[in-house]
Amino acid sequence: MDYFLNTLPKAELHLHLEGSLEPELMFRLAERNSIELPYDSVEQLTAAYDFNNLQEFLDLYYQGAAVLLTEQDFYDLTWAYIERCRTQHVIHIEPFFDPQTHTDRGIPFITVISGISRALKNAETEYGISSGLIMCFLRHLSEEAAFEALQQAEPYLDNIIGIGLDSSELGHPPAKFARVFAKARGMGLLAVAHAGEEGPAQNIIDSLELLHVDRIDHGVRAIDDPELIKRLVTEKIALTVCPLSNTRLKVFADMSQHNILEMLEQGVKVTVNSDDPAYFGGYLTENFIALEKGLGMSKEQAVLLARNSFEYSFAKSERKAEMLLELNCY
Ligand code: HPA
Ligand code: ZN
Image (cartoon, rainbow, N blue to C red; front, top):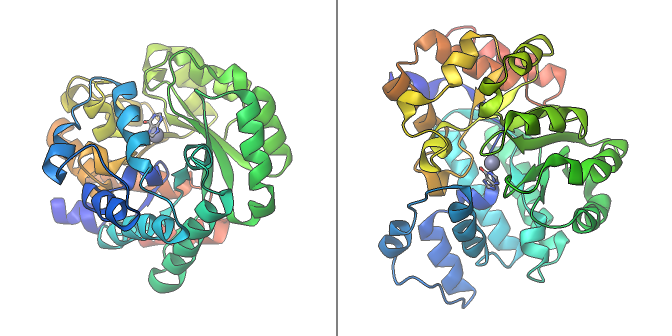
């Protein structure tokens, strides 16, 4: 089954590039850039990866991202993730990046986007991995700061397919970003938002109503609202669910309690994703394996989850058809 899950063609729709920064690369970049890390070794660093909630993780995640300074650093970060995708048969990716985490440290927007975009282009030409880059606004920062990030992105709209909303959900509901999402959508960008991860089902409804998102990231708290579940099914609104993230951040106490397969069986268009694999103990294949071990996911369910990842991606219709065809022999 592990081999089957690894070779199964898949798309990843919820992956923070900064969350794919492996400890070894973090140390390498710290040395290259003469940055002092508050840890003596990889072991000491990973021992700190013991989170009780989203905020405890975010504190380390932003600290880790501080080793990223140059265009080459962003290239190396993105390329390392692409190499993982190649070995796990991830053939289409829609990664997130958090520009404000970097521009607030004085790194120019162009440095960030150039390194990431160069790696994504190489992924297409060298490995045939297609992609669409999504820029996230940090919801703990102001609306004004989000408008500023959007303005900085304007010269690079050819490199970005959409916007997202991440960081601390509790205390930062979707309404604060309605106007900046409207502006971005008016510029032709697609939209997604983290909602219903730690926050209530209402945040999912508000993301649909106020932000007009095309997909919901996480969305597991939808289960608390049967009317919302019905709506997600009839309107075919996909959820990008992240099983290992949810157990590591204690959204669910144990994988056996995760609701992804329950929602799948109810007809919700759920997909499997890794979120921040360097921090949560696994890339896409490991997330599929965790569902098999923890929830008894069948091969048929795994294929349906992979099918959803292509169907609800933002890929062009010809590319979607090509990817779906690859599933025919599974
Ligand atoms: N939730 C919110 N913000 C994030 C996450 C997440 O799971 N990962 C990285 N930023
Ligand atoms: Zn996320």
